[in-house]
Length: 288
Image: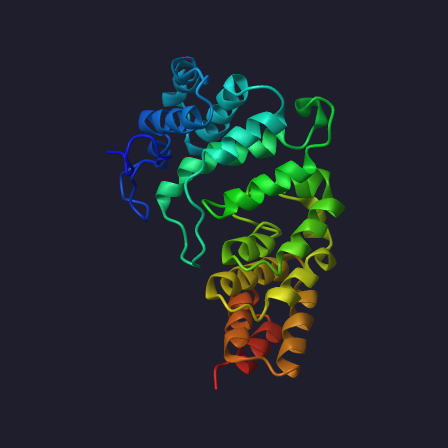
């Protein structure tokens, strides 16, 4: 059953958490394709709904969730008008309202996985945009997307291919009032982001993202602080000494209770392995 009235953007209803025995791929099924076609047709009355449906549904049953996201994104690119700039404009205008609270998204928002792939696949190369640089438009699209679903996966190709420009934009976003945007800054640059493509430079050089963690370590949102903790925990797996130095410095500077939680969370992996430095830091970061 659709969750909005006809004429407004809609997404299929879904539980907040994974249900045992229910494949995740069903989040992108016929109903999702129908709702996507509906949303795009509201913005662009000339959008060929039936042709898009045939393309998007062709072979969909055999695919898993992430494959379905990429497959539907390719159908969007085939049937949306003109250049990437024109097409992504239609996509952005078809979105449901942005979210400003810090609550984590549920499963329903995976409806926007194809949108994520669309930006990542077609929003980097100028060849998809009539020869014009699509970077700024793509950054605007990622900003909009992360307030409906997440852009942590879609931003990874930009970090790989356009590292300096993307990191510069991310550093600017660390001061954004929306917690979903601030979380993207930490989560999207995680060295070992679950489900995310590896960005070799982020694993090799932790100095690239330390300024982001420094800015967000005392964020007002626990949602954002948890991402900082996970990011620092990733760093501790590849560059433990760097992570230890950061945590120790934060403690010496007078870490708050919230920051001590980040430190303890980040030290879980090396502490579990019996690392003496991690155990010492984790003990020093106990709430008092």
